[in-house]
Length: 339
View (cartoon, rainbow, N blue to C red):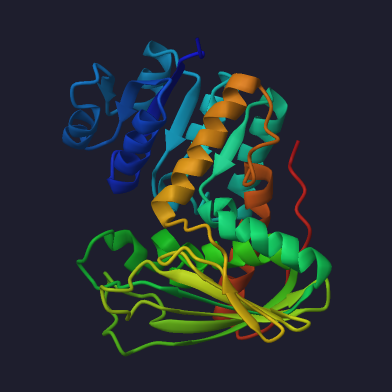
Protein backbone atom coordinates (compact mmCIF):
# COMPACT_ATOMS: atom_id res chain seq x y z
CA UNK A 1 0.00 0.00 0.00
CA UNK A 2 1.26 3.48 -0.88
CA UNK A 3 2.30 5.82 1.89
CA UNK A 4 -0.42 8.45 2.42
CA UNK A 5 1.03 11.94 2.01
CA UNK A 6 -0.50 14.44 4.44
CA UNK A 7 -0.61 18.00 3.16
CA UNK A 8 -1.68 21.45 4.22
CA UNK A 9 -2.66 24.43 2.08
CA UNK A 10 -1.68 28.06 2.64
CA UNK A 11 -4.02 30.35 0.72
CA UNK A 12 -7.52 29.21 -0.24
CA UNK A 13 -8.08 30.93 -3.58
CA UNK A 14 -8.87 29.50 -7.00
CA UNK A 15 -5.44 28.00 -7.63
CA UNK A 16 -5.45 26.25 -4.24
CA UNK A 17 -8.86 24.76 -5.07
CA UNK A 18 -7.50 23.42 -8.36
CA UNK A 19 -4.45 21.90 -6.64
CA UNK A 20 -6.65 20.26 -4.00
CA UNK A 21 -8.96 18.78 -6.65
CA UNK A 22 -6.05 17.43 -8.67
CA UNK A 23 -4.42 15.91 -5.59
CA UNK A 24 -7.69 14.16 -4.73
CA UNK A 25 -7.76 12.73 -8.26
CA UNK A 26 -4.15 11.53 -7.94
CA UNK A 27 -5.02 9.80 -4.67
CA UNK A 28 -2.89 8.55 -1.81
CA UNK A 29 -3.03 11.94 -0.11
CA UNK A 30 -4.89 13.51 2.80
CA UNK A 31 -5.69 17.18 3.33
CA UNK A 32 -5.06 17.91 7.02
CA UNK A 33 -5.20 21.71 7.23
CA UNK A 34 -6.10 24.88 5.33
CA UNK A 35 -4.94 28.36 6.31
CA UNK A 36 -6.24 31.64 4.94
CA UNK A 37 -6.70 35.05 6.59
CA UNK A 38 -10.29 34.92 5.28
CA UNK A 39 -11.48 31.95 7.33
CA UNK A 40 -14.64 31.53 5.26
CA UNK A 41 -12.51 30.67 2.22
CA UNK A 42 -10.54 28.11 4.23
CA UNK A 43 -13.77 26.53 5.51
CA UNK A 44 -15.11 26.33 1.96
CA UNK A 45 -11.97 24.67 0.60
CA UNK A 46 -11.73 22.20 3.48
CA UNK A 47 -15.34 21.17 2.84
CA UNK A 48 -16.18 17.75 4.30
CA UNK A 49 -12.53 16.60 4.39
CA UNK A 50 -12.20 16.98 8.13
CA UNK A 51 -9.14 19.20 7.66
CA UNK A 52 -8.36 21.78 10.29
CA UNK A 53 -9.12 25.40 9.39
CA UNK A 54 -6.84 28.24 10.44
CA UNK A 55 -6.29 31.94 10.00
CA UNK A 56 -2.91 31.77 11.79
CA UNK A 57 -0.14 29.95 9.93
CA UNK A 58 2.05 29.23 12.94
CA UNK A 59 -0.90 27.71 14.78
CA UNK A 60 -1.50 25.39 11.82
CA UNK A 61 2.11 24.21 11.86
CA UNK A 62 2.04 23.73 15.62
CA UNK A 63 -1.17 21.70 15.65
CA UNK A 64 -1.09 19.67 12.43
CA UNK A 65 1.54 17.22 11.30
CA UNK A 66 2.05 17.27 7.52
CA UNK A 67 4.47 15.97 4.93
CA UNK A 68 3.92 18.76 2.39
CA UNK A 69 2.69 22.32 2.23
CA UNK A 70 0.97 23.83 -0.81
CA UNK A 71 1.74 27.58 -0.89
CA UNK A 72 -0.79 29.46 -3.03
CA UNK A 73 -0.43 33.07 -1.93
CA UNK A 74 0.47 36.24 -3.89
CA UNK A 75 4.15 37.17 -3.98
CA UNK A 76 3.74 40.12 -1.60
CA UNK A 77 2.26 37.81 1.07
CA UNK A 78 5.41 35.71 1.49
CA UNK A 79 6.72 36.56 4.95
CA UNK A 80 8.77 33.53 5.93
CA UNK A 81 6.15 30.76 5.77
CA UNK A 82 8.33 28.58 3.52
CA UNK A 83 11.25 28.93 5.91
CA UNK A 84 9.12 27.94 8.90
CA UNK A 85 7.83 24.89 7.04
CA UNK A 86 11.27 23.84 5.78
CA UNK A 87 12.67 24.03 9.31
CA UNK A 88 10.05 21.45 10.32
CA UNK A 89 11.04 19.13 7.45
CA UNK A 90 7.91 19.90 5.39
CA UNK A 91 8.26 19.63 1.60
CA UNK A 92 7.10 22.63 -0.42
CA UNK A 93 4.86 23.07 -3.48
CA UNK A 94 4.95 26.79 -4.25
CA UNK A 95 2.97 28.88 -6.73
CA UNK A 96 4.95 31.31 -8.82
CA UNK A 97 6.07 34.10 -8.53
CA UNK A 98 7.97 32.93 -5.49
CA UNK A 99 8.91 36.37 -4.16
CA UNK A 100 9.25 40.06 -5.00
CA UNK A 101 12.97 40.29 -4.27
CA UNK A 102 16.08 38.14 -4.43
CA UNK A 103 17.04 38.59 -0.78
CA UNK A 104 13.88 36.83 0.42
CA UNK A 105 14.13 34.06 -2.18
CA UNK A 106 17.74 33.34 -1.21
CA UNK A 107 16.71 32.96 2.44
CA UNK A 108 14.04 30.46 1.44
CA UNK A 109 16.49 28.60 -0.80
CA UNK A 110 18.98 28.42 2.02
CA UNK A 111 16.32 26.94 4.36
CA UNK A 112 15.31 24.37 1.73
CA UNK A 113 18.90 23.29 1.17
CA UNK A 114 19.85 23.34 4.85
CA UNK A 115 16.86 21.19 5.87
CA UNK A 116 17.04 18.94 2.79
CA UNK A 117 13.35 19.28 1.92
CA UNK A 118 11.97 18.80 -1.57
CA UNK A 119 10.51 21.74 -3.47
CA UNK A 120 8.49 22.29 -6.62
CA UNK A 121 7.49 25.64 -8.16
CA UNK A 122 4.50 25.85 -10.51
CA UNK A 123 6.26 26.36 -13.83
CA UNK A 124 3.98 23.76 -15.36
CA UNK A 125 4.90 24.23 -19.01
CA UNK A 126 8.10 22.27 -18.35
CA UNK A 127 5.97 19.16 -17.70
CA UNK A 128 3.99 19.24 -20.97
CA UNK A 129 4.72 16.19 -23.16
CA UNK A 130 5.19 18.52 -26.15
CA UNK A 131 7.94 20.34 -24.28
CA UNK A 132 9.78 17.03 -23.82
CA UNK A 133 9.78 16.76 -27.62
CA UNK A 134 11.02 20.35 -27.90
CA UNK A 135 13.94 19.54 -25.59
CA UNK A 136 14.85 16.59 -27.82
CA UNK A 137 14.72 18.63 -31.03
CA UNK A 138 16.64 21.61 -29.64
CA UNK A 139 19.39 19.41 -28.21
CA UNK A 140 20.42 18.65 -31.80
CA UNK A 141 19.69 22.09 -33.27
CA UNK A 142 20.16 24.89 -30.72
CA UNK A 143 17.74 27.81 -30.74
CA UNK A 144 18.71 31.03 -32.50
CA UNK A 145 15.59 33.11 -31.88
CA UNK A 146 12.98 32.78 -29.11
CA UNK A 147 9.76 34.81 -29.32
CA UNK A 148 7.21 34.65 -26.52
CA UNK A 149 4.03 36.30 -25.28
CA UNK A 150 1.85 36.52 -22.18
CA UNK A 151 -1.71 37.87 -22.24
CA UNK A 152 -3.79 38.93 -19.26
CA UNK A 153 -6.81 41.13 -18.66
CA UNK A 154 -6.35 43.43 -15.68
CA UNK A 155 -8.63 46.30 -14.68
CA UNK A 156 -8.84 48.37 -11.49
CA UNK A 157 -11.21 46.65 -9.10
CA UNK A 158 -11.20 43.40 -11.10
CA UNK A 159 -10.28 39.94 -9.94
CA UNK A 160 -6.93 39.62 -8.17
CA UNK A 161 -6.66 43.42 -7.69
CA UNK A 162 -3.11 43.08 -6.32
CA UNK A 163 -1.81 42.44 -9.86
CA UNK A 164 -2.78 46.00 -10.85
CA UNK A 165 -0.60 47.53 -8.10
CA UNK A 166 3.12 47.75 -8.80
CA UNK A 167 4.11 47.52 -5.15
CA UNK A 168 2.28 44.19 -4.78
CA UNK A 169 2.99 42.47 -8.11
CA UNK A 170 5.86 44.36 -9.82
CA UNK A 171 3.58 44.36 -12.87
CA UNK A 172 2.54 41.78 -15.44
CA UNK A 173 5.97 41.75 -17.10
CA UNK A 174 7.08 40.14 -13.84
CA UNK A 175 4.06 38.24 -12.53
CA UNK A 176 2.73 36.63 -15.73
CA UNK A 177 5.61 36.77 -18.22
CA UNK A 178 7.77 34.77 -15.80
CA UNK A 179 6.20 31.65 -17.34
CA UNK A 180 7.86 32.56 -20.63
CA UNK A 181 11.22 33.55 -19.12
CA UNK A 182 11.23 30.19 -17.37
CA UNK A 183 10.44 28.02 -20.40
CA UNK A 184 13.03 29.93 -22.44
CA UNK A 185 15.64 29.22 -19.76
CA UNK A 186 14.61 25.55 -19.91
CA UNK A 187 14.72 25.24 -23.71
CA UNK A 188 17.25 27.85 -24.86
CA UNK A 189 19.58 28.35 -21.89
CA UNK A 190 20.43 30.96 -19.29
CA UNK A 191 19.46 34.59 -19.91
CA UNK A 192 22.39 36.93 -19.29
CA UNK A 193 21.04 40.37 -20.28
CA UNK A 194 17.63 42.01 -20.71
CA UNK A 195 16.30 45.33 -21.96
CA UNK A 196 12.70 46.51 -22.06
CA UNK A 197 10.22 49.14 -23.26
CA UNK A 198 6.70 49.81 -22.01
CA UNK A 199 3.60 51.89 -22.67
CA UNK A 200 1.22 53.40 -20.14
CA UNK A 201 -1.88 55.59 -20.10
CA UNK A 202 -4.31 53.55 -22.18
CA UNK A 203 -5.89 52.50 -18.90
CA UNK A 204 -6.17 55.55 -16.56
CA UNK A 205 -3.64 55.35 -13.74
CA UNK A 206 -5.06 55.43 -10.21
CA UNK A 207 -4.03 54.28 -6.75
CA UNK A 208 -5.57 50.92 -7.69
CA UNK A 209 -3.82 50.66 -11.10
CA UNK A 210 -0.23 51.77 -11.66
CA UNK A 211 1.36 49.04 -13.79
CA UNK A 212 2.38 49.20 -17.45
CA UNK A 213 -0.35 48.51 -20.02
CA UNK A 214 2.04 46.61 -22.30
CA UNK A 215 5.74 45.88 -22.59
CA UNK A 216 8.32 44.19 -24.74
CA UNK A 217 11.47 42.58 -23.32
CA UNK A 218 14.58 41.75 -25.32
CA UNK A 219 16.56 38.74 -24.11
CA UNK A 220 20.21 37.82 -24.63
CA UNK A 221 21.15 34.20 -23.91
CA UNK A 222 24.49 32.80 -22.81
CA UNK A 223 24.46 30.63 -25.96
CA UNK A 224 24.45 33.73 -28.18
CA UNK A 225 20.77 33.33 -29.10
CA UNK A 226 18.40 36.29 -28.77
CA UNK A 227 14.72 36.60 -27.96
CA UNK A 228 11.82 38.80 -27.02
CA UNK A 229 8.70 38.56 -24.87
CA UNK A 230 5.58 40.70 -25.45
CA UNK A 231 3.06 41.20 -22.67
CA UNK A 232 -0.16 43.17 -22.15
CA UNK A 233 -2.96 43.52 -19.61
CA UNK A 234 -5.45 44.69 -22.27
CA UNK A 235 -6.31 41.26 -23.65
CA UNK A 236 -9.94 40.21 -24.11
CA UNK A 237 -11.19 37.77 -21.52
CA UNK A 238 -11.16 34.99 -24.13
CA UNK A 239 -7.36 34.86 -24.18
CA UNK A 240 -6.58 36.13 -20.69
CA UNK A 241 -4.04 33.87 -19.01
CA UNK A 242 -2.57 32.62 -22.28
CA UNK A 243 1.17 32.43 -22.84
CA UNK A 244 3.33 30.69 -25.37
CA UNK A 245 6.30 30.85 -27.71
CA UNK A 246 7.80 30.44 -31.15
CA UNK A 247 11.39 29.16 -31.22
CA UNK A 248 13.50 29.09 -34.39
CA UNK A 249 16.61 26.95 -34.93
CA UNK A 250 18.40 25.71 -38.05
CA UNK A 251 15.62 24.60 -40.44
CA UNK A 252 13.27 24.21 -37.46
CA UNK A 253 10.39 26.18 -35.92
CA UNK A 254 8.51 25.20 -32.74
CA UNK A 255 5.21 26.82 -31.67
CA UNK A 256 3.43 26.18 -28.36
CA UNK A 257 0.71 27.82 -26.24
CA UNK A 258 -0.54 26.76 -22.83
CA UNK A 259 -4.15 27.14 -23.97
CA UNK A 260 -3.89 24.75 -26.92
CA UNK A 261 -1.29 22.43 -25.40
CA UNK A 262 0.07 21.14 -28.71
CA UNK A 263 3.64 21.53 -29.97
CA UNK A 264 3.49 22.56 -33.65
CA UNK A 265 6.68 21.60 -35.50
CA UNK A 266 7.99 22.85 -38.83
CA UNK A 267 11.01 20.70 -39.69
CA UNK A 268 12.39 21.67 -43.06
CA UNK A 269 9.40 21.48 -45.41
CA UNK A 270 7.44 19.13 -43.14
CA UNK A 271 4.67 20.42 -40.86
CA UNK A 272 3.61 18.14 -38.02
CA UNK A 273 2.11 18.29 -34.55
CA UNK A 274 3.34 16.43 -31.52
CA UNK A 275 0.62 13.90 -30.75
CA UNK A 276 0.57 14.67 -27.03
CA UNK A 277 -1.98 17.27 -25.95
CA UNK A 278 -1.48 18.91 -22.54
CA UNK A 279 -3.64 21.75 -21.27
CA UNK A 280 -2.56 23.81 -18.26
CA UNK A 281 -4.52 21.66 -15.79
CA UNK A 282 -2.93 18.52 -17.24
CA UNK A 283 0.52 20.01 -16.72
CA UNK A 284 -0.34 20.86 -13.12
CA UNK A 285 -1.55 17.31 -12.55
CA UNK A 286 1.69 15.90 -13.98
CA UNK A 287 3.71 18.28 -11.83
CA UNK A 288 1.78 17.37 -8.66
CA UNK A 289 2.09 13.66 -9.38
CA UNK A 290 5.85 13.98 -9.70
CA UNK A 291 6.02 16.03 -6.50
CA UNK A 292 4.04 13.44 -4.52
CA UNK A 293 6.11 10.58 -5.96
CA UNK A 294 9.30 12.45 -5.08
CA UNK A 295 8.16 12.69 -1.45
CA UNK A 296 7.35 8.97 -1.35
CA UNK A 297 10.66 8.02 -2.99
CA UNK A 298 12.60 10.65 -1.02
CA UNK A 299 14.27 11.71 -4.27
CA UNK A 300 13.72 14.94 -6.18
CA UNK A 301 15.07 13.83 -9.56
CA UNK A 302 11.54 13.76 -11.06
CA UNK A 303 10.90 17.41 -10.23
CA UNK A 304 11.72 19.65 -13.21
CA UNK A 305 11.08 22.97 -11.44
CA UNK A 306 12.72 22.96 -7.99
CA UNK A 307 12.99 26.18 -5.99
CA UNK A 308 16.73 26.43 -6.69
CA UNK A 309 15.96 26.73 -10.40
CA UNK A 310 12.94 29.00 -9.95
CA UNK A 311 15.20 31.50 -8.16
CA UNK A 312 17.07 31.90 -11.46
CA UNK A 313 13.83 32.74 -13.25
CA UNK A 314 13.05 35.22 -10.46
CA UNK A 315 16.43 36.87 -11.09
CA UNK A 316 15.45 37.40 -14.73
CA UNK A 317 12.11 38.90 -13.71
CA UNK A 318 13.78 41.29 -11.27
CA UNK A 319 16.13 42.34 -14.07
CA UNK A 320 13.17 43.03 -16.37
CA UNK A 321 11.54 45.23 -13.72
CA UNK A 322 14.77 47.22 -13.41
CA UNK A 323 15.10 47.53 -17.20
CA UNK A 324 11.53 48.84 -17.40
CA UNK A 325 12.25 51.36 -14.63
CA UNK A 326 15.52 52.71 -16.02
CA UNK A 327 15.22 52.17 -19.76
CA UNK A 328 18.70 50.63 -19.65
CA UNK A 329 19.92 47.10 -20.39
CA UNK A 330 20.42 45.00 -17.25
CA UNK A 331 22.91 42.16 -16.83
CA UNK A 332 21.54 39.04 -15.09
CA UNK A 333 24.11 37.70 -12.59
CA UNK A 334 24.42 34.05 -11.53
CA UNK A 335 22.44 33.05 -8.44
CA UNK A 336 24.11 31.82 -5.25
CA UNK A 337 22.15 30.89 -2.12
CA UNK A 338 22.87 32.64 1.17
CA UNK A 339 23.89 29.71 3.31
